[in-house]
Structures are given as structure tokens and as C-alpha cells.
Image 1 (cartoon, rainbow, N blue to C red):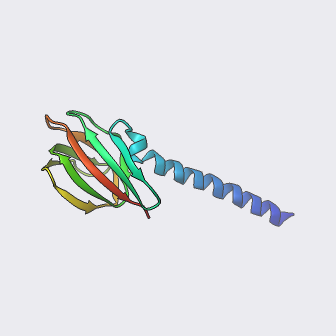
Image 2: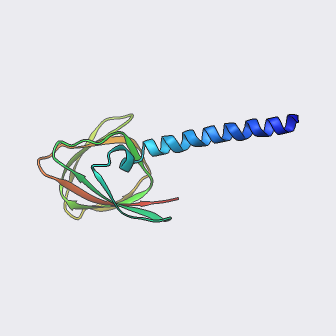
Length: 125
């Protein structure tokens, strides 16, 4: 009986910890944090393709990213502020692209006068 109690207590603890980990991960998912900025174009077991559109002055909440590829569709100026550290501004040119990440918790704001649009392809583990 003691073994059954220990097993059940362990199972309940594992479920609670698992739920907290999933909830924390989802709370940092940019699509969940700022859904008006992100449009999911495709998602499967390997990738998630996102169209990200920042209106002038628009900010997004704190979020993180797995490893991803990005491509600038409409150029402009963004400021990225990491949770710990100094903010950086980026002048994004049309066609700029790269592979980056994973990226820890940060927030981004369009500090320019034009719409900025990116395509992001997140790589799933």
C-alpha cells in the first residue's frame, strides 16, 4: 500500500510540474503572447512558419523563440529588449535573412515610421 501511495504521489507531482512547464512555455510563445502580430502560415511536427507584422509604434509582450530562420519582407527599424540586458536597435533591410536562436525572453517594438514584416520559420526539436 505504501508503494502505491508513493507511486500516486509521484504521478501527481510529475503531472503538476509538467503542467507548469507547458504553461510557462506557452506563456512565452509569441503567437500566444501577441496574436495580433503573428499569423501562422504552416505548422507541422518539424516547423512553424510565421508571418510577423509590426505596425509603427507597435510592441509585443515578453516571449522567446526556438531556433529559427527569418527573412525581412518589409524593411524597417525594430528595438529588441532582452529580459536581462540592454535594448538593441536593428535597421532591417529588405531581404535580410539568417538563422538564429534559440532566443531567450525578450520584447520587440517597431521604432520606425513604416510597417515591418518578417517571415520566420521556427524549427521544432
